[in-house]
Amino acid sequence: MDVIVAGNREELGKAREAAGPGRYALVPTMGALHEGHRSLIRLAREQADQVVVSIFVNPLQFGPHEDFSRYPRTFEADLGVCAEEGVRVVFAPAVADMYLPDRQVAVSAGAMGSVVEGAFRPGHFDGVLTVVLKLFNLVQPDVAVFGQKDAQQLALVRRMVADLNLPIAIVGAPTVREADGLALSSRNRYLSPADRMTALNLSKALRAGAVQREPERIKDAARAVLETAARFDPPLLLDYLALVDPATFTEVTEDHRGEAILAVAAKVGTTRLIDNVVLALG
Ligand code: AMP
Image (cartoon, rainbow, N blue to C red; front, side, top):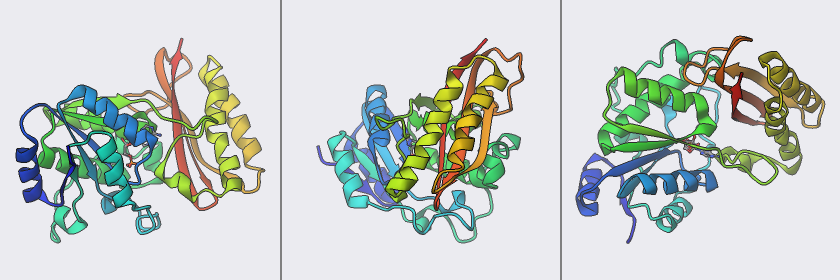
């Protein structure tokens, strides 16, 4: 079956009518689709009768000095991926279709949106949650799939669903990696071969941390890898290394039991990368 492309709310309504009844899953993306996105789509197909993929580079979640204008846009290739993966509807609105020029009201991610990744990207998670809520309202899915790769985003979407009583099931999908450990990301295409060698140390640091048991040892083992990579050419420029509770994103204490997320963010050349791994403590 062909993919139906909808560019605005009206076309989306018609697309849903054409696609027919059943359980709907939404996979929100910013396009430049890769194997990670494909895995989300496959998971969505297991959860629902119809899959809607949204492709929207959301200006609200980029800071003034971030890469909104140079973010990769590969729409025709993305449509091919969606067709191959059995997606029924692609929702790809223009910025003007999503945001009124005089818009006022937005979602606040609260304190949880200003720690860890949020501390380095002020307003980022407000922008993410605002667009996710809008996409939920426009598409009206029964279920939505998000990647564990963006662990704080996943946690905040779950928080929003709980706090605002949204009737949508949230499914988290494991991070897809290259054979050498590098987490797939639309931004990886910016990495030169030398950048990529340095970038490998994000996942290497997470693996070094993951074999330890206690919080301080986990962070020390990961930090040792990151400090070595800081002397590479090009250097790994660390933004943060954090060991946090998966639900709240607060730093775990030495006596923490249960799951924790070891998260890292760093710049390599002009590219900023994030990665994380889920650990069981205690
Ligand atoms: P993005 O297009 O980067 O905004 O990502 C769209 C969705 O794909 C988000 O839920 C991401 O967490 C997820 N995603 C991105 N990279 C990966 C990956 N390597 N593995 C699994 N999911 C991913």
